[in-house]
Image (tube, rainbow, N blue to C red; front, side, top):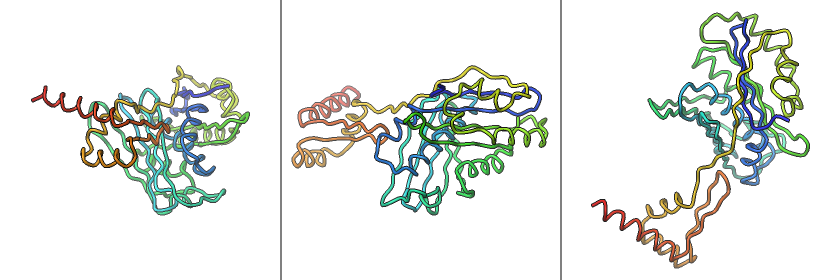
Amino acid sequence: MASNVLNRYLFEDLSVRGELVQLDEAYQRIISSKDYPAPLQKLLGELLVSTTLLTATLKFEGSITLQLQGDGPVSLVVINGDNEQKVRGVARYEGDIADDANIHDMMGKGYLVITIDPKKGERYQGIVGLEGDSLAEILEGYFANSEQLKTRLWLRTGDQDGKAHAAGMLIQVMPDGTGKPEDFEHLEQLTETVKDEELFTLEANELLYRLYNQEQVRLFEPQPVEFHCGCSRDRSGSAIVTIDRTEINDILAEVGSISLHCDYCGTTYTFDEAQVSELFREAGSGNNTLH
């Protein structure tokens, strides 16, 4: 069974490129960090797949962040991924979410922020209105308006063998302008037939053969996708010493310790009074050496 992998492919004779991403553990790590309602788990999966597909288009070292914001029950859904396909994500919500809630029910009046952050070069940010019945349609509109590239996405989430899976496909005309509209429409019709079970279980070469057995498809080396948070006890300690010492002392007097919780992975880092004092002592000695 294919899992946590991204595949890129190219139609040799049709000036169209494609991507296929299949995720299980990476998706499961994200939705297990909090008790998310089922529709929000689905939206997180779709945003995760979308981010991975878009990150695959990067031609440089850097990251892409897709962030949904709105005034509905769900105020924030964010997924971050980089060129090494290390991903993380979180959502924030309040109140009840109906079992059949769609993206508009959850987000209310909102927008999608796409941030491209290269390690070298300028940061780019685009803001997209939630125009479309699904996240896939919203992103297709973004590509049509901002990139002028005909693009289709298929985003799927569900259970397979009792475990949560998220998967998706993208096809896009090559930017060289040689692609024909009828070729793209033909590939759209073929890709539309893909079934959830096929996306969740089949290896890339078998899946692509089932869909496009009459076409010349070049499949590139797969790239693994993994959940990666980046939080640590050291980073949490560094954050504590940026807070006013008086405020820290008040918390210690009331609670007896300082705890920082990571929303991305669910880890809590706790520091008792002696450990907090050591953090400030080390920060102070560091400042003294600098001056």
